[in-house]
Image 1 (spheres, rainbow, N blue to C red):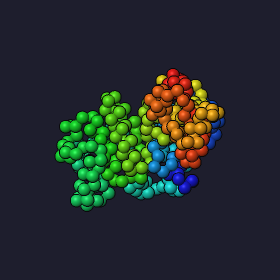
Image 2 (image 1 turned 90 degrees about the horizontal axis):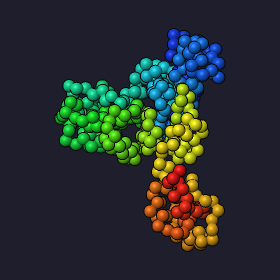
Image 3 (image 1 turned 120 degrees about the vertical axis):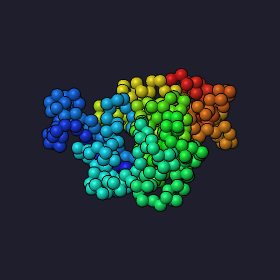
Image 4 (image 1 turned 180 degrees about the vertical axis):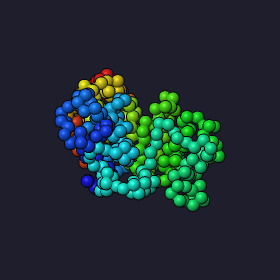
Length: 346
């Protein structure tokens, strides 16, 4: 594992059927999912998947229904036993853990937030949030202090003595998020947490989670079937189809260079200017005026700046602007109104 890796999955397979390990041993990996089912009566849910997740990043696993995304993520926590493969967390092999070690992992290192909130109807918001701390054996006073702290973090101040039935769907999901965070997990796993919410509430919850992540820098694994949500939430995205990963990359890499038609179809309706950066669309050859501006350190644009943030500046100017890399200050290229307008149409 790299020093910056939090989770590394290597060659994960999951077959569903009565004799999955024996079937996998003799399986021709070139067979499609339907061919395997026809020949063996087993369903290939996850097929030879490998990827790594860095500490403190949000890693999105996305795909259509039946693509294998939820099964894959459940293999990480061993809520579903992988048929084959290895899951490493901080150099510890999760697939080799015994029941006691797994319980300890789920209680102390990892939390999950699901689409359906799973709140206890007879418990107040405060008691729901403190449940994980309670089963861990945390003293009541400490439990209350920590629960009140995360109540404030998720914007539920004043609601601690209310019951779930008295809350809206968005507020209930905030309770679910607070409950997951109360135990201070290193890893948070989200299984389509906002898909049951109304669009406006969903956007609010996405923004809320992004703000929380900015403060806490936890390692997050986020499952969704919505590509717009994926590119908003993810530092890296793994796009799945028929149990396999079609492409892994940053939102910008995927939108700029989709590897196949399946990925391209997801990117079709994405407003690219919201995703692409100056460095991705710039013209590498610079005119003399641009070089002169660069020499004077005028009108310089960071190569990582999103096109969306440059629209007003560049569309009101007849000049090209130098694009520089902030890390080194090196002149990389130029960007102008024409390039910006083209990226908005693409």
